[in-house]
Length: 79
Image (spheres, rainbow, N blue to C red):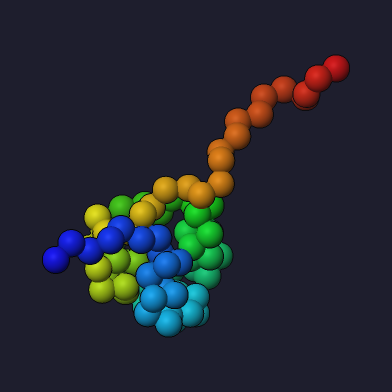
């Protein structure tokens, strides 16, 4: 059986797991977990292990990418 790759937020929704429960299961800071769930932070390999274990899936079944575009802005703008 092929399992679909889902985001952390999608797995939490599927499992009726709250942010607080994921924080408790992973021992990660709430702000970090929220950022990962919102796709604003790409977790380290150790964080990925903790999250995958807490969700009961392997790391390769979780989509870890950013959802919001990363912009690099240099200088002081036009002018």
